Length: 315
Image (cartoon, rainbow, N blue to C red; front, side, top):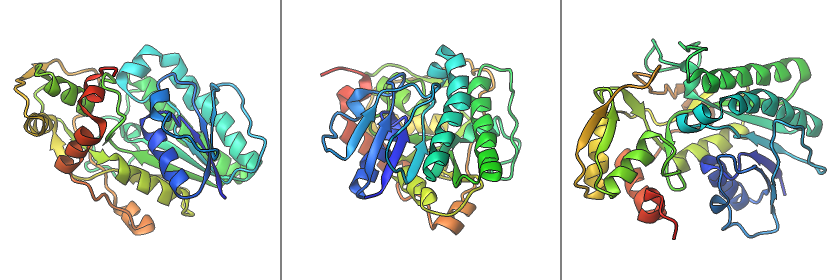
C-alpha cells in the first residue's frame, strides 16, 4: 500500500485529492491546521488508512513511517485569505515548503508542489506556456501569494538539483467544484452564492477580463498523473477554454435560474486581464487534458454541493 502525505488536505483541492488517493489504495496522511481548510471537507472519510495531523507546517513536522509521495498543497489561495494573513502566506510558501521538502528528502519520496498560474502575474504572453517567466508586481497586495509560490518553485528546483529530491511542479489554473468555500472571494463561488440568493452579481471592471476554469475532478486527475510521472520542470494543468467574467456571470444566472442583475465594481489592484493555460506539455508527457466543460461542471457543482453549501448556510 503506497503512503501519501497531503499538506492542505482539508482544503478544497486537498480533500478531493485525499479521496482520489484513498480510492487508488493509498494510505493518506492529511496535514492541515484548518486555517483555511475545513473539517467538513474530510469528516466523511472514516477509514483507518486516513490519518489527520493537525500541525502548522511553518514549524518542522515529521512522519515516522515510510512515505512514497508528498503532495504539497498547503497555502492560503484566495485573495480574501492571503490579504488577511499576508505574513503567514509568505511563511507557508517559504518555511512550509522548506520543511515539507525536507520531509520528502528524508523519506526519499516523490514531491509535488501545487504552484499556481499566479506566478505568471498579469501576463504579457497569451496563452501562458511554462517557459514564460511572468509579469508579477512583487510589492503589490497580491505579491505575498505570487512571490510565495515563485519562491516555493525556486526552492523545489534547488532541492532537486542540489539534494537529488525527486520533485514535480504543477501550475494550477482556476479550478472549481463542490467544497469551494462560498465566501472565499473567487469568481465562481461568489457568482453562484449571489445568483442562488437573487442578489446582484458583482463583476469587477468591465467584465472583459478572461479566466479558464477547470473542474476539480479533471485537475486531480492531472495532479496524480504528474506525481506518478518522472517529470521535474513546471507543468500547466488547467482548462484552456477561455471565458470573460461577464460570460461566466451570464452562464451562472442561466444555470441557477436566478433573477440576479449584473453590477460592476472597481477592478482590484494588479488583477490579471487574461488567464489561459497552454497545456501542450501536459498533453505530451501526461496524456492529460480536461474533459468537463464549464456548463456541465457548474451544473455538477450545483447538484453535488447543494444550495445550502453554495450560499454558506449551515444545516
